[in-house]
Length: 130
Image (cartoon, rainbow, N blue to C red; front, side, top):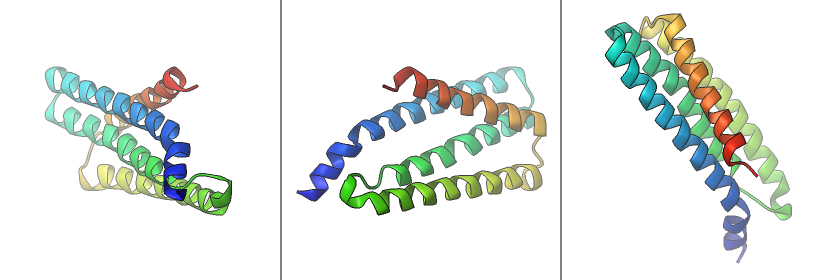
């Protein structure tokens, strides 16, 4: 009984997160395709890196944010949310380091891909949020 109650409580949040991640993924795809048509290979790799730096931590956070629900699980909800936020920040930093140091990506294109994809996620939350 407890598990179905948790699913019922987290269902709206999970659906909103899925919509946001889908919109973010579509935005990332179009950015990569546009850079492939109009840019160099370095620009494509850099923009793809930036979009992934935005997309992957957001997905990880969504998993942690909607793991628990309900007043009886308030402590787990708070811990999971905090863990998700910390892991999102750590993963974002690690991915930026990999993009700049490992891939030798162009900083402007990485940041452009990251910013546009991150803003698209925020706009999707405003659009689909209640």
